[in-house]
Image 1 (cartoon, rainbow, N blue to C red):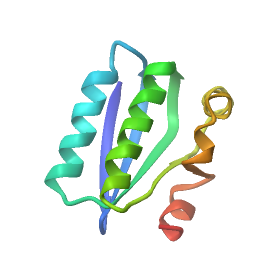
Image 2: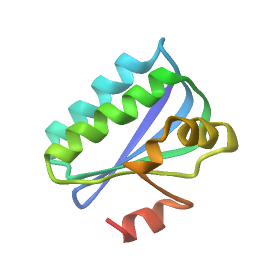
Image 3: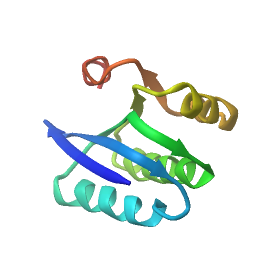
Image 4: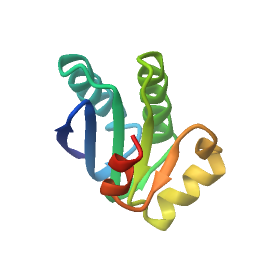
Amino acid sequence: MKLRFDIIDKNLLVHFDGELDHHSAEEVREDIDSKIDANNIKNLIFDMSNMKFMDSSGIGVVIGRYKKISKLGGKVVVTCLNPHVDKIFQMSGIYKIIDKYETNEEALANM
């Protein structure tokens, strides 16, 4: 799993490239948390456009970051989901707490 980060104001945009599963989840958690802590981040946008695969460990990463950001008074959203990842999110019920947007620009406009 490769991650690329963009910081726009107090928003952290995380671009995923690869597979988010039990093999990569811990490193992904640590990388995202360190960026949040080091840059005084308020909101988090997960760009899933290059997400090849995600299992329940990926849901855990998203929910854990949701809890962290919520304590800071911010929002977590996802963008650019492929049908496989969208189906996992629907089945998990995560859309009850996290909004989905088609583009990063749309997400940024709603922060």
